[in-house]
Structures are given as C-alpha cells and as structure tokens.
Image (cartoon, rainbow, N blue to C red):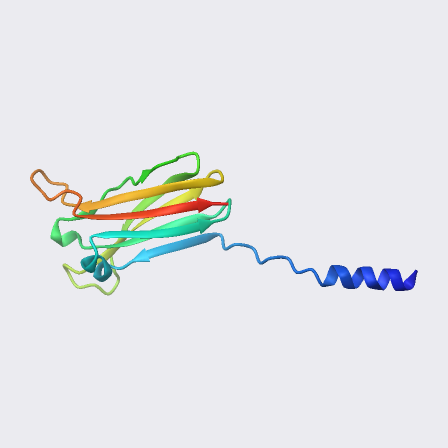
Length: 138
C-alpha cells in the first residue's frame, strides 16, 4: 500500500496546471506607426473573463480624433467599458498622446472591433485611418 500511495503522489506532482491567463491584454499602436499605415489590423485571443485594452496614438492638435465608441460586431462576445484620452507626460504642446478603450469579454466567440480616426468637425476628413482587431474569446 505504501508503494501505491507514493506512486499516486508522484502522479499528481507530475501534472502541472497551465499558468493562469493575465487579467488584461493590451494591444498598442503608436502614433508614428499610424503615420505609416492608414489601415491597421490585429488579431487577439482572450480567455473568458479577460479584459482587452486597445491603446492608439493620437494628436489632438491636428484636429483628428478617434471615434469615442468602437463598433463591435457581436456584443454578446465583447462589451466596451471605457474610453479615455491620455496626454503624454513628456509631450510638448502639439505632441502626440494616446487614446485607450477597454473591453470586457462577455461570452466565448469571435467579434471584430473597429474604430476610425478623422476630423469630426463639419467639412473635416472622416475615417482617414481605421483600426480593426478580430478578437476570439475561448
């Protein structure tokens, strides 16, 4: 019996649990990267219960801004829970900053998040840049 107990202890010790998924995942695209690409796409895999932060470069002094509310193809999979503009702590007046959206997973599945960058004023250039991410929640 002692041998059986020792072997079963070894069997349990040999099984490693996968590491837990981080509570949040971040996708970030700098302002300089955006200047080189008008259409940006990223793919993201999340575990149920994870939060996604999307951080995109911006420069408010140009009159351009990202849409406050992202378009989500399936709100049964993801929900937008926040959006904030963040000035760079080291930026000179007229320098680039960032905008951050927060999304919570709701259910397993796939959804596409899209937001556009343009000049919201009448006559301003609309949808000059587009950011899209395809999110798979497992």
